[in-house]
Image (cartoon, rainbow over the protein chains, first blue to last red):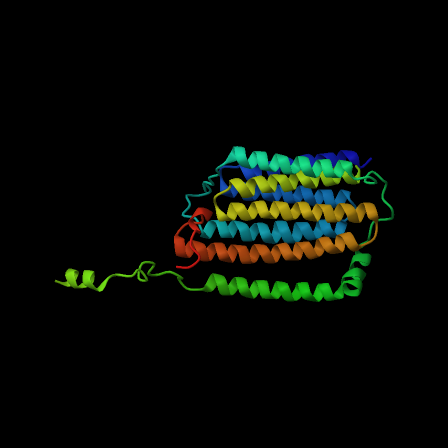
Length: 183
Length: 99
């Protein structure tokens, strides 16, 4: 019953993830990432995590995607939307990632008890709210402090003025060379 | 749809992210690959939350989303700083620890 939407969302997610890592244009890669995140949101919805799906759309696709696109725009000398993104070492990286996937898939298939039906009903948004400010309230506060620190740190780092205006001034120049040049 | 199919899908997403991490040379493209991998981790949390019941899986996925957002913000700030000092965002250029 759930298999058809699950398969569709999985196909969309995998295809757009491949386009994210293979697209020769950085802007296209970022937009494909948006589709991959949307496919994952659909997977969350199929898995009964409707609140998580909403957070994924609002925070990732609305926030992180916009941030990434702005980052691309201000760090490239670009002509329109043509931002080339080089990539190297396809064969070695392909071997590594396929080997990693093979190991993970083997470990998953060797683990017993993964094909059981869901043990209980899916958590509602109310349950998640109670868990967030009840059981896990310390983690919740720590994460909020961490977010605040990360935002302040990002602002401080990005506002720092011109870190290396004179990259060569620290080179040691022998005094004799300076004297010869003056003469 | 079983738990193992969800986990295999998340492993595939993670491996694709690793591939991008190893092949890309632009810092922002590397960040995109890292986001794919974080997304795969969230998928694992949500799958276990669905198949084991209870709100813990989704709660952990929410924490992971918050951590990823913080990481992306700091990462982009570092990329912008790197662009100012080197005029490009190729990760090969980051070879020295100090100026």
